[in-house]
Image (cartoon, rainbow, N blue to C red; front, side, top):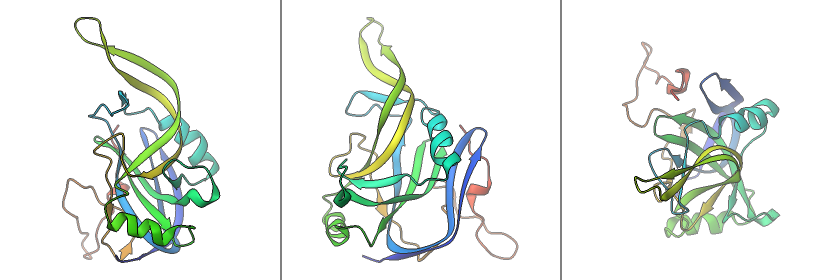
Length: 206
């Protein structure tokens, strides 16, 4: 398993129809994981789906405005030993919320985390927070099928063994010089000087 150095300056940005964080100068050594922690097209095993703008208000109001990082922890724990890292990049796109997470080499259980990921025991991301607005979705027989979350507070994202959202699996990023993440559904674009164009320069679509 390769450790990755993240280099660059920290910028937390807000845009009118979504959000993203991009940390592009901060130097840290650790493990980088990436993947979606939220998908718009699914109902999770807790019987909930999420509206595309469900986290926008809180993330912009709290994390963006105060320039705070979204923490990563272990198994939804709340103790010092459960601290694992932070989100270094976050992008809301038409498919969900994609993140790249730095697992800090200073985490108490860093070596154990690496081993549990290698053994495919820690398998996915799981968000944690508070729901402030929702609607009940019913079928043609007027029976409730699931809850659609309209607005929620995001307090942290966890590394878990069994994510409630089965598609919220992560992978180890394979870049050695991480400067941002490209659109997963398109090939890397290059500028005239041959450098890759960071897809975060484009406005995110809600």
